[in-house]
Amino acid sequence: MSTDATRTIRWGILATGGIAATFTEALQTLPDAEVVAVGSRDPDRAKAFAERYDIPRAYGSWAELAADDEVDVVYVATPHSAHRAAAGLCLAAGRAVLCEKAFTLDAREALELVELARERGLFLMEGMWTYCHPLVRRLRALIADGVIGEVRSVSASFGFAGEFPPEHRLRDPAQGGGALLDLGVYPVAFAQLLLGEPDEIRAWAHLTPEGVDDNTGIVLGWHHGAVATLDCTFVADTDAPATITGTAGRIEFADGFFYPDRFVVHRPGEEPRTVLLAEVTTDPERGTMRHEAQEVMRCLRAGERESPLVPLDGTLAVMRTLDTIRERIGVRFPTAG
Image (cartoon, rainbow, N blue to C red; front, side):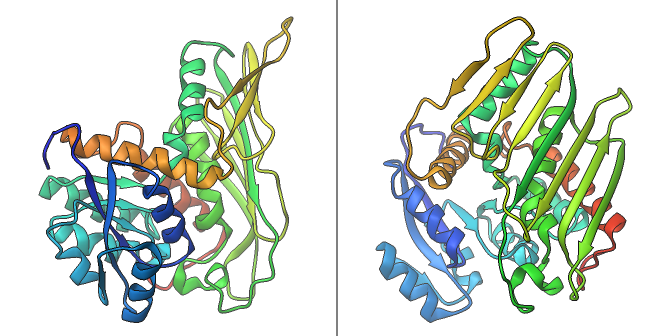
């Protein structure tokens, strides 16, 4: 990959679902990004997606997309049960990869992808958009500056209510179903962004008849005394709030902690201070994907093989925590431990 700071980055999109559409729309707002190909196991869906977004090439297989030498980086947007296969195929073909979260079904699969990318000298990043968000980066800077002292606790919640039939991916063990990998990855990653990999992990969940979690509570502990209380659900709506409490104050996200537009800093004896997102967006999901895509493209132009904002060792640490939580709550996937 050229280190030319002005070079347009050419993207391939692997899969054609809702998240692939949102990411493609985000890319098409960036003047230095070009979506040049889309691949799907269903040729008709690939063609329809290409026509919808005016993409030059549509492939009826993942392998054809991976083999396209005019693609600089592939965005993997399949269900997470297929991430290992899809991202691995692209890496083996020499493509850089941005792979949606949860990164894989388990830590073993995640390590296989990381080792493959490092062996081949290729860029690989998990699509943990929260870590790339300007306000979350500002949050980390403020905490590093000691604005709330030493972090002692983190709380975060993410949930929505829905009626999902048994065959829906959220209830299908074969597709990595359950609230944990789909929603719980956000609060777990948020806590570990601030406190690192936990020393102790406790969890409880209600399981569906198919054997996946639909309502999960998590407590993480660190030997230095910090704790995190987290939850995820697809049977109740939450506003996705989060609070970080330190020895000298606290920071609160009233809603949408994973793509926030503001947070409030509380310190004893001072008026609360609101920190706002500089840009105004009517679509926070697409806006956050823009930041994620921009970080990928910055890394590719700089010749970096992983992002300092979303390091692969951090992704592996989150996957290890998710594995332990699944073990605690008794969720088993057919192709994972």
